[in-house]
Every structure is written in structure tokens, then in C-alpha cells.
Image (cartoon, rainbow, N blue to C red; front, top):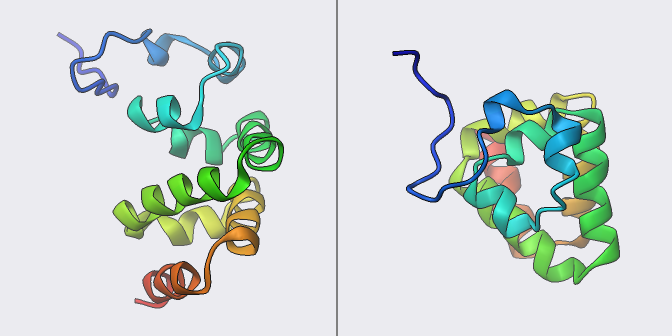
Length: 114
């Protein structure tokens, strides 16, 4: 059969491949859920998705949310540069760099350079 890009790690979430980003946003997922369902790249690369992530960062426990995003980026180092260069992704990355610790900034920068 057709291969599904979605890998839910056994959790029975919706079939995101059949949903628009607006439909996914309307589910009001937390950052943990977005990460669990591997939706962070999709959100970073979308206008409304990027806005949603920025609202999560600005409206909640900023340090905690940024920490989760930094951990995601540390585990997906190869994607950081494409997010930074993306017309929507870079807004989120700027916020992450603004709010993260110096040591995390250094780790992320090292991954950008290498």
C-alpha cells in the first residue's frame, strides 16, 4: 500500500497527512504533542504554524517551551540551518536564541557551523 510519512510511535493520533495545517492548529496541541507527533518541522515551515509556535513561546512558560524546542533542535541538528534560512522558520529560531541560555546558544551555533 502507499507509505505513510506519519510515524506516531504507536500513539493513535489523527492522520495528519490528510489534514491542513489550519486543521492541525485547531487541535490546540501543546509543544510536547507537536514533538510527539513529529509536527515541529511542519509548523516551522508554515506561516500559521510558525505563528502558533511563536505564540506558544510568548504566552506560556517561555523558558520551558524554549528548552523543549532547543532539545528538539539538538536532536535534529541537520535541520537547524534550513529552519534559520526559511522565511517562516527563522522567526521562531530568533525567539529561541533570544530566550535560551548561553550554553545552549553555543551548542546551536556549533551545529550551524559544522
